[in-house]
Image 1 (cartoon, rainbow, N blue to C red):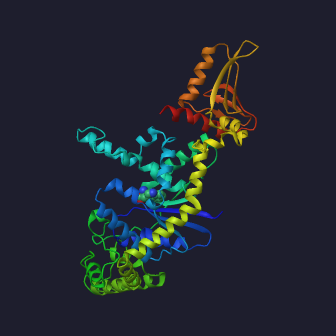
Image 2 (cartoon, rainbow, N blue to C red):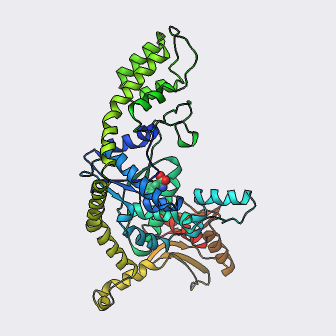
Image 3 (cartoon, rainbow, N blue to C red):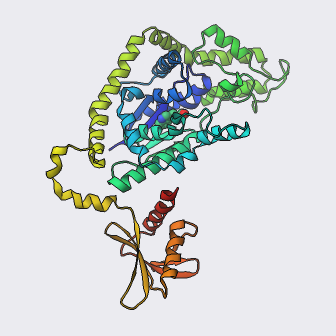
Length: 442
Ligand code: TRP
């Protein structure tokens, strides 16, 4: 199976140059590679969390779909769809909700920030917080797991969400068997952050953006409004720290950037440099702008593209996968109960969480073991009193001290030898099983 890369796009309206250079352009380029299967979707269910203006949801969805298509996303070669056209997403959200730890969701950055703000303002902690905001990470996990994506390109702010998706997937797999691929965040570390008109990072919240599809004249005006220093024509200029130069670099090839650096050193007038930067950017954007105009003028065409994309995915992947997951969790055809009954024993073993057993051996000593279904993970030593065993088991369950496994498979807690790893058991598996006790206690 080829590498599956999934990108979720929040419909937030027409993008600016910073979005283009930092996110859209590299993603579209990456989607053209032969060995990847790309999924791009408009996260309109997610949009409902941040806006309750239906007209705005519709308009932003259209704008952002037209933007990505205008920038060269090819719906023939990538899966391009609207989240709400694949309603299996919401059903999966529920299945995941039932394994997701509430304690983990309590720690989601966006939710925590809302709670902190309320607290600072002396309000009830959850004032104005919808269950939608709280469930944001589960919905996002469903987006990713529904298509068993391997890689999810995201900014730093989204990494926690990918980790949560992994966690939910792991818990589901643990309980119901291996159904989900554990996704990985592909962190966009070195993506260009473009400076805005005032030299700070280009961002809507600084009101310093150049809209991606600004008409030629507006683009020229905005490029001319970029801050520069007051050096006169003929005075050498610094490329370092120059917003104008950085903007040029984001569009020029290496040779062009060098030539521009030379003319900076030779004292080019700011006006002349700006003219060149403007023309260079416009050369790349003019065809995109034109496509954007014609796409936007044909919303029915975009609707068709999205519908087709969504339907294909539903038929080929989402529906059959959900049918399979429904079966896995027990949402089953009642008449099929006497059919393949042979798997029930297996299932029972899978559903039982790891457990500690405490017992007394013939030697009179008290023992414990940790088992996961039929698998012996840890065989405890014998102890004089049940109390001692109880204390060690409680300590292991609490997660307060992690056991250490030495090269000979002996297991230690602090300095005490408490037992041995089960035959063929990976120390990692032991630690993971122990983690479940603390998670389940959250
Ligand atoms: N939360 C993402 C953002 O704010 C958007 C998103 C929703 C997403 N679902 C996703 C991103 C799934 C990647 C995968 O940008």
